[in-house]
Amino acid sequence: MKNKRRTFILTISLMLIFLLTTTVFAAEPDAAVQNAERLGILTLLPPFVAIVLAFITKNVVLSLFLGVFSGTFLLQLSGHNIFGALFYGFLGIVDKLRGSLADPWNAGIILQCMAIGGLIALVSKMGGTKAVAESLAKKAKSPVSAQIITWLLGILVFFDDYANSLIVGPIMRPVTDKMKVSREKLSFIVDATAAPISGIALISTWIGYEISLIKDAYASIGQSVNAYGLFIQTIPYRFYNILILIFVPVSALTLREFGPMLLAERRARTTGKVISDDAKPMVSSEATNLEPKEGIKLSIWNAIIPIGTLLVVAFAGFYFNGYESIMAGKDTALKAIITNSPASFAAIRETFSNSDASIVLFQAALVASIVAMGMGVHKKIFKLGEAIDAWIEGMKSLIITCVILLLAWSLSGVIKELGTAKFLVAVLSNALPKFILPAIIFIMGSIISFATGTSYGTMGILMPLTIPLAHGIGGGDPQYMIVCCSSVMTGAIFGDHCSPISDTTILSSMGTACDHLDHVKTQMWYSLVVAFITVVFGYIPVGLGLPIYIVLPISIAATVLSLYILGKPIEETKGNSVVEKKAANMN
Image (spheres, rainbow, N blue to C red):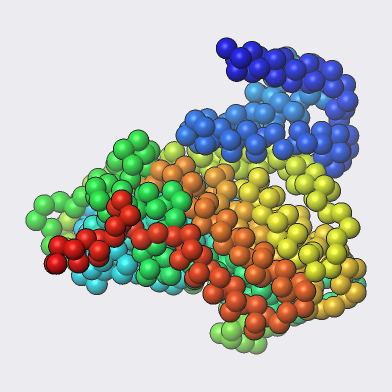
């Protein structure tokens, strides 16, 4: 009764606050800055609502929808009373969703997701997925080897985080299911080898954006630099990326887990249930039940050729799309590199950096789907009409994922318009001692990225602020500025990695057919531990001036040690390990 009374009083109080402050939120020309100044802490309401409700209701769509609505409601408080703001705020949701879908990049991501979903369905219908699973299962003879193979595949698909999530998960899911590895653990491995590896790869769809941010930020302090060379110098200081990539195989090899992941892995090993009883996998039954026809001769080539086509066409597409973009631009130096040495490493690097991944991966998925259809018809596995039906069935299974992505993008748009990130930066960027700045920047990037669900947006916000700040506090020390630069990109990836509203987190859940919130809950413990090590054993020591050849090995050792301190063996019940029980039985 008391709780109900408190809730009622709190609700009335909040309504009164909104009513009394309606006239304060007048519209201004620079909306984001003005909203950040005037709304203050209320700018945190949309991500707070979305994240908290996601955990409470376990319904991502509803949580994101209400998060967007709370944001559009705040935006409509200028010029309307609370009831008008509610009405126009609801109408504003439609505008945000339409705007998200109208964005060419977002539309390309939706199309590539659906096209790759159709491709996976075709490969499954031809028996390719089952054949690969059976082939890998022969090598993956234990949960350890199954996880290590998944990790290796994730590293191999280094060129794009979206492609990583959508390719590795569906291929390895049957294998890990057979080895009784939980979907939560599979989803973590896929997610941990998506953005973390793409963010530090020498050639990827990320690098163009990262290099452009570095170049512009240094230009703001009057320095013309080799942005790609500086990017390479940041790699040893990208502690979170490196440590999370090491954490995965160490966890697999030691078979030690902690937090909710320990419970998930023990459930999978002891009961064979790779997902919990109340789980809601991101992939529908239509996608997971696309079994090949009876009597079909299983062949791994039914998977290798279509997926191989996807990868080859993607690589060729990245080059061609980037080539067209460069040649249509005004940068004569880049044009000279492409014209004089089209096959050089520099040319490949620049073309990949300037390509549009959303278009290229959609095109590659279409070509690979056509190849898969042709193979299936040629081998008389299915008729053309059946192939198209299977492709559409695979696309239908990703509709819920597309809805979630649209809502997540809409929430990101609302947050940007409210000035949420600007408010956080203003609150957190006070005068700081030199040694602590890299750690604080990492934490700032983590908070903003977690709240907004975007690593790209976080980098774009913080990089222009960080380089001048590091230049001023560090007295122009170039090495110190590189460390601070790396902390921006690393913090953005960490926050995005464990945010429930991040597109890569959503895609990882979808690709592994895992319950999205189960994936977030189990992964977050690991991400937070590695982030803690990143700060305490990484950025603070380098901020104090310790050389990287000392700091990096120590941070790696701390990561390995964390599994022995916090982790427990999976095969353990009532304090007695399986090994101990076997020994007792032998005696």
